[in-house]
Length: 303
Image (cartoon, rainbow, N blue to C red; front, side, top):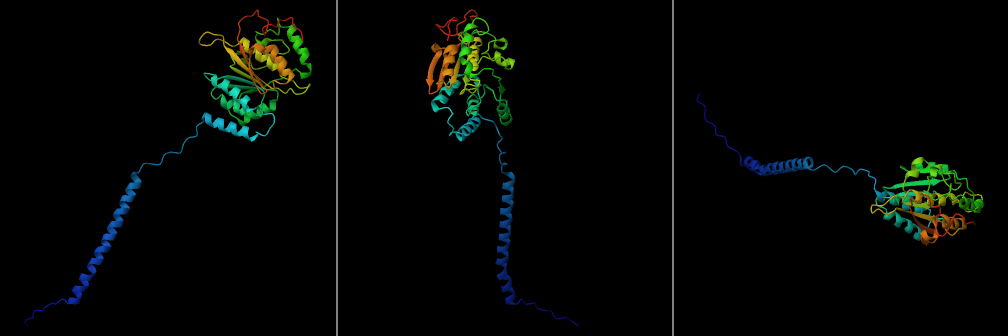
């Protein structure tokens, strides 16, 4: 039997349906490709961008020390025994003149202790105090703090006897140029670590020990010791001139500080007085046969 050919006819509705969905598929495909491309390039950008900088390392800077010192000083600014602005500026100016940074010796631990360390950053700052406990606390709390306790044997009530004694023995144990380490003078501080006697001190500040009553050690020994240090270990500057030591005496208005400063640091060496702070400049001398601290004062003087 012969088969009859069949004719396949596509219904118009089928064609229309196919035609109408095609743009939708293309739109979906375009959206997918766009999102994929955006995600790809975003990932690539993140992977190729430079890494974030490392966190800054903690580095000690002089300004940090100054800031902490000033903050500490401000925290106790309501105390009555702190130095005035004029007194602080006088000492800071002397430290600023030192080049390279100073050898700075301070008698007494005070409210300005941290400030002195900060202002003399890079130099050598040494503290001497009668209170061993206070020295220990500063050593525990602040790195590179250098301090030594001093056992004073003097009393403010005996100051007149001590100045008479020094005048009588000015040609032997209390002479102005000597090695204090081996001194037998009652006013000499001779129990410090040996290396401190070999240092040429640029600036010496006397703000201790206590001296506001007769039973306290007073600053007689500190003033005498500073006077000898300035004359004995000044050395020479680059120009060949004899080096000098700047000595500051705080509470200069009190009788003991004034009398002993005039006796051993001398009026002719007095540069200025700012409030209660006296500023002396003591020149080094190599004259071993010179037994007078001051001009016009001989060893025969009595009080």
